[in-house]
Image 1 (cartoon, rainbow, N blue to C red):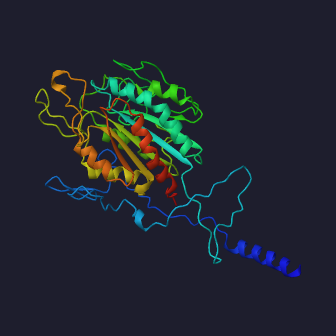
Image 2: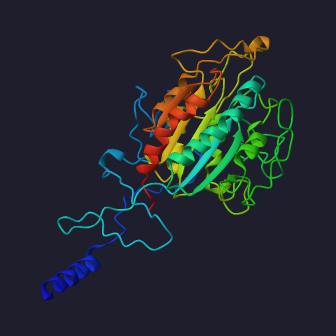
Image 3: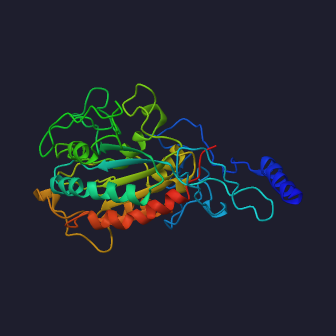
Length: 370
């Protein structure tokens, strides 16, 4: 009995000296002020190319704002099954440090919805597919206990509430043709974003139908970057508290047109599109998430290159089909967790169902800040 007691005491001393819980990976946290609509640390050369973004091949960039996920240790999940404190010494067969706690406990969902004239059917399709998507995600990510859900449009949204009529402002009120034409707030958290405490199906049906009265010069990528900027998420700002450093960010892009610098528009008038190029958009989004690229999931419902949607005859008032969007495709494929679907699909339920596995994997490999 004395030998057994001595063994237990020795194990207890070993645990006190070795059972640390701060063995988390570290990501960078750039502090450079955003420029070019939230895009930072970039150089635009005289021939229109960029450095600090991506190379001309469209492969995964080597931006200094990113973190090389390939060097990270394999992530595991240590689940706390109840309210009592955890006293888990981890797997220490050789007396080493325990396996660190990883995995996301929070998810921020940002929906970037084209609100131009051809998007009525697509918005209804999205609203109808949303409840199953959120329900399946909550089931799959069973250890995640907090969700923020926000919606923005592809322009400055003149129908939105006071203080939010800007690019990247979270939708709290809709108006114009084909919209829900309603005030969607108050949400449970008292902010301009929804949470797990809201009836998400009902609330999203209001905010997600942003309508078709928006600007025909869509700038969804610029709006996306503005939505995640610190100044727009600061106390008192439109997006107050929406983006969290310790949350997985899931961006859902839905647009039937390319985001480009169009010079041969229907009236032969130039259309600017979002500032920058795909590499700039990538770098801007990664920088906003502390430089950890794998803490972002990008789901793009667009006109993919292959297979293609029926052509959108926008110059003759067409409202079905979609433009090819190779620039948005390039942006999406830069991410480890990027996924592309057809906006012209009759339902988006399969797209979201297929994306759940990717979100789950990104959550499991989440790299906590600091």
